[in-house]
Image (cartoon, rainbow, N blue to C red; front, side, top):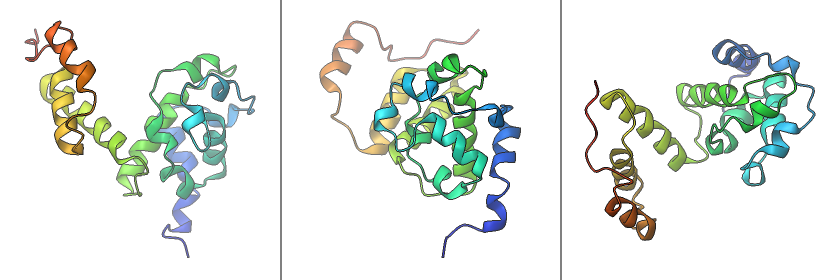
Length: 167
């Protein structure tokens, strides 16, 4: 038996459409979005198959998919879509639903990064890379990863240690 209430699964397509404002049913699965996605080879489904899962209302596979957390929101998929579907907005909607419905997060470090990014902007009014980086490293325990590139970036002033004041 599934952990998901089957009565709720029929509404996932409506929820995603309402949140994203995207005409998911306009996708005719030409695969242009997936062929241009820089992360598709690391994904289980890819953007076009995720849109199909939305159409089918397969909430369990959608909300527990690592794909929604791997998406970088780079807009390449949407730029390639002949029907102008903003797939990154669909991915944002799926991430919101996954958190709200307490789905198992397939990529917890990506969720932590996403959460810290939004919290940093909420608190500071803008992005501050050092705050995000320090928070992420402490929360995930990946303290020493990327140090070979991180220290030179700080020393060259590419990652300011203190946030600039907002005007």
